[in-house]
Image (cartoon, rainbow, N blue to C red; front, side, top):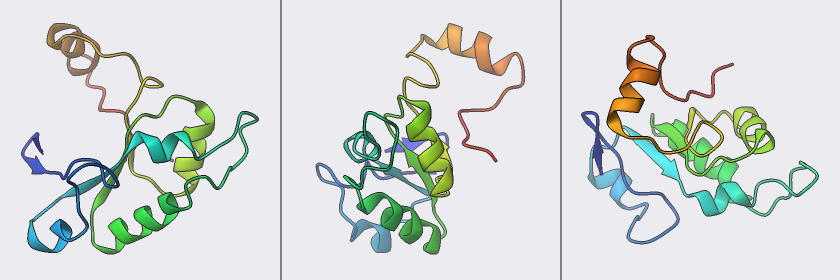
Length: 120
């Protein structure tokens, strides 16, 4: 997938995404599939351990100099956990529902606001 001038593989852990691509292609970032994000915490907001791979994926990506994007973030608990794990960027319904290009430009571009960063 090519987005905003950067090369990104599809979400790691599903479909045709393969770790071997990380050595063969010049990726800038790595996406974590929402299925892993969804299993990070339980209903009470505690770390569920259901996706022990997430911390490993984040560490591996950072060691390769890649930005990490978490897909499907829908709760504050998930966001806080990802922030604690040093994930760089999130996307999902927590940030907002999909919008048309005109609404996106009006909401984000005209006010000078950036994308959905996890920030400190």
